[in-house]
Structures are given as C-alpha cells and as structure tokens.
Image (cartoon, rainbow, N blue to C red; front, top):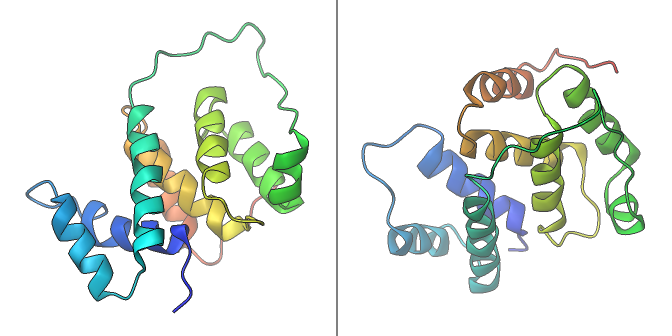
Amino acid sequence: MKENVLDVLMFLFEKYFYDEPEREPDRADMEENLHEAGFTNGEIDKAFRWLDGLAEQRHQPEIQIQADRPIRVYVESEVDRLETECRDFVMYLENIGILDAQRRELVLDRLMALESEEITLEDLKWVVLMVLFNQPGQEANYAWMEDFMFDSEQEYRH
C-alpha cells in the first residue's frame, strides 16, 4: 500500500481530532491504529513530525502588518510544488478573510513540510482545515472551510 504523509494525517484528523473525543488521544494508540490501517513506519514518523511542527506554531505572537494587504511572492521551490490552482486558492482565502498573512504562512510551511513533489488543491484544502483547527480563535474560519470542503457545489472566485 503506497501512502503519503497527507493520507496518514487525514486518517488521524478524521479518527482522532475531528469529532473532539472525550480524552486526548495517546500517541502509542494512534501509532497502533495506523499500523492496523496499513500505514508504514516511515510515513507514520513523518506524519508525527508534521504534527509536531504544527503544534510548535500553535501559539505564535500575532504579526503586525504595516500594509493593508501584503503581497506574497512565492519562491521557486513553492512554485514547483504548488499548482497554480493552489496559489490562486490561497489568494482567494486571503481575499475573503479566511486566512490572514500569518495563517497563510503557516499553511505554506505545513504544505512544504509534506515533502510531496506536487501538491494538489485537495491537499491544500486539507492542510488549511488542519491548520485552522489547530489555531486558537479561528473557529469561524475553520467552520467556513469545513462547509466549503464538504459542499460539493461550491465554487470560488478571486
């Protein structure tokens, strides 16, 4: 079974975090369930490192932006891995207020940490959902993103 880190993260998110369990999941239990689901040690380790990186950035001081809307210039490694559709969607989320500059950078950091050669729009949506879920004060933006992802008739324009 060829899986990637995002598949492991989606499995963990759906099984342990999404429904707000009564108790905090134990890492050993999560690993055992991941092995039972057929994920490899390498992908499991990468997924936990990804989650650790996300947790480290949970309580960052707010960035004070001087301009109304800063422009994000993508570096070559980001352009190589993020489809144009993904970059457009990030801009869309910024334009409608779902992502601010700080959350945008966190999303991009976590996307690059996936180590995938190419990141699709679906990958991006899942990462945005996970990042917003993990950020204090982002409940409304998380709820909007959740509705957007699971409402198949939604279209976006920027």
